[in-house]
Length: 86
Image (cartoon, rainbow, N blue to C red):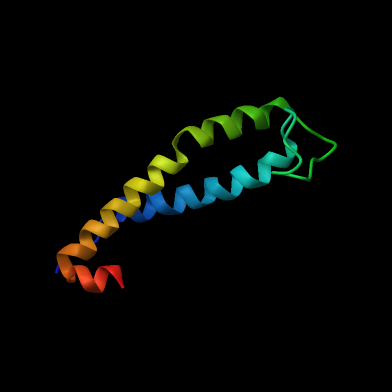
């Protein structure tokens, strides 16, 4: 049996925390938002949240794809392709 890589668990936990921070911070952005995509905007906005959202947005999807690819690779080593797809 293979050893679990704790770094991937830590990376996943950090990315989930940043995902919550990303969605919570959108309402406080100083930029104008498309009301059909995000209808709530708080009255106390700050430019900091524009930078935070921009920073998190640059790497969140690629990081989740790396985690997903690694976990899928581990599943293919342990199970058959039919079991993985089901």
